[in-house]
Amino acid sequence: MYIVATPIGNLEDMTYRAVRILKEADLIAAEDTRHSRRLLNHFGIDGHLTSYFDHNKSLKGEYLLERLHDGANVALVSDAGTPCISDPGYQLVRDAVAAGISVVPIPGASAAVTALCAAGLPTDSFTFAGFLPSKQGKRREKLTQLRDEGRVVVYYEAPHRLPATLADLLDVCGDRQVVVARELTKLYEEFVRGSVTEAMASFATREVKGEIVLLVAPAAEMPAAVDPDDLLNRYLADANLSFRDMVSLVAVETGIPRSEIYARALELRNALT
Ligand code: SAM
Image (cartoon, rainbow, N blue to C red):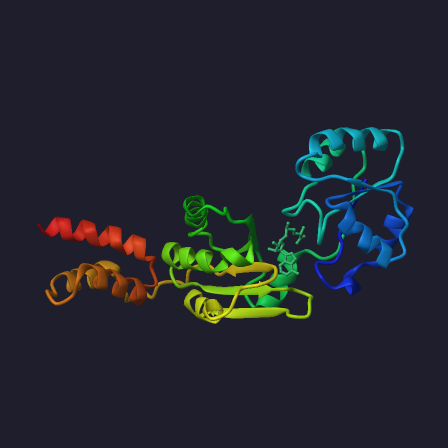
């Protein structure tokens, strides 16, 4: 079984090997057969396509394994990029490996690595976190779990959710350095690099369109001189400053998330009464 990467936008990113393997395959399992037919037509590949997507993967997986057992060469493609990476395929690969079928990767584009290599953030090690949940509560939970991650975190995100995700990121993780990589390899490819607030400002006056990878840098090391407790104690003694303004001020001055400063400020205030 061949796991065949296809372009994430620019068709020139198709590899010679991918074209040959798809031409030679007895069966091409595709997420969306109409979409993949257009790709195959472009490269003059007259392959036999069958669908393999999230909702038919159990049944179709059994069928594909039978064909593989009978000696067929099966190639798996997704709509774009590398199959199994936030795309269907993992269960099929797992079951094929368990059944002793050889699984051959045909490498090519994947949006996560494409974004990372040009982002300008550390690349020595990183965490790929896939899609963030669409519901705000779950999304904030996932952001909280990854808040203390010491490596760059790479997320996939839908364009219409980007503004809400950046707002949650600011609240949960503070004003980190981020890169929004949009429409990679396509006509309107764009990298927005800066703090979360700068990224929010960049998208505030336009509709966010296209496909997006969001990369989040780890929290910057806190300068030893800025102790949040010191600042909070000083500001708590200042009758002219509201509790809310104090929390915002200390969050900005220390780079620590507002929610954490809020909780600590409550503790310190309660200890004073
Ligand atoms: N398997 C694919 C891969 O290897 O990158 C990912 C498939 S996942 C269903 C689709 C998501 O990948 C999009 O919502 C977007 O977050 C990201 N993506 C795919 N193509 C992209 C592109 N050209 N530019 C930016 N992000 C892209």
